[in-house]
Amino acid sequence: MRASLIQIAVDPDEPVNSRRRRAASLVREQRERHGADLVVLPELWPTGAFAYTSFVDEAEPLEGPTYEVMAEAAAGAGVWLHAGSIVERDPEGPLYNTSLVFSPDGELVRAYRKIHRFGFDTGEAVLMGAGEELVTVRAADLTFGLGTCYDLRFPELFRGLVDAGAQAFLVPAGWPARRRDHWTLLTRARAVENQAYVLACGTAGTHAGMEQAGHSIVVDPWGEVLAEAGPAEEVLTVELDPARVAKTREQFPALKDRRLR
Ligand SMILES: O=C(O)CCC(=O)C(=O)O
Image (cartoon, rainbow, N blue to C red; front, side, top):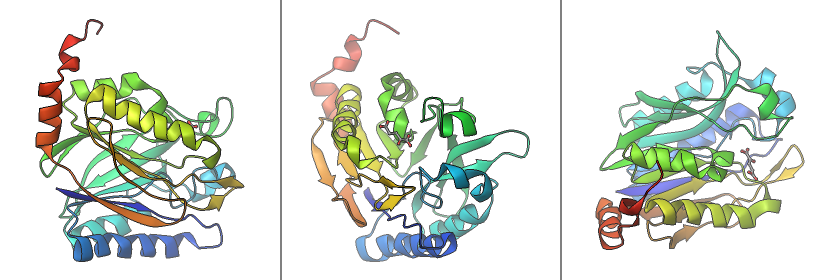
């Protein structure tokens, strides 16, 4: 299967609706020009991951404006779409950092609420609720486990996703440029230790004073970097093969040697 990662720039001068339309047209373009089966967008690209002060105003219901535009984009292009994440306003509860995955007919197949909230005792950690559910999704011929940005620092989440059948991980992010070395290290580590693909899609640009790392990355189950973006808006397209996961796990069966569960 072919996957495209859209490292969209979050420019605070661009109205959110214009960014939504631009994202939708980039999704269609990945299908039309590159034959993508799966398209991935980054974390909180409508608002910006560090725009904490606007979270309350910009929050939207699960089936709000981003959902509508993205459902239509997935159906129009006929692709699997991980539409990145939004600030979700749960009518019964707090805000959540929620990722949306659509099928090629525009159905929302899974939503994942970020489990590890970033900010210690500020930002997401105080403004948002923590997700509690591990989420996997079968798209085309691979099972994907979902994580979001800061989740990358918690290997037990990814191991749990492997136990639930994941062969690849989709990780939307808004990673700061100042910790880019951690981003590269952690994405490769999660791939090597789990013998799984990692598709990590970040934002570009600077918002709320935080320069974004960009450098979206796709790592194969042996830890090799298949593609890596620069810091600016860019799209990566890669081929994924379930046989590569099976072969790595068969030829170097470290996952079978686990002793602690
Ligand atoms: O863990 C990090 O260094 C960055 C995490 C982050 O920016 C986020 O989760 O939004």
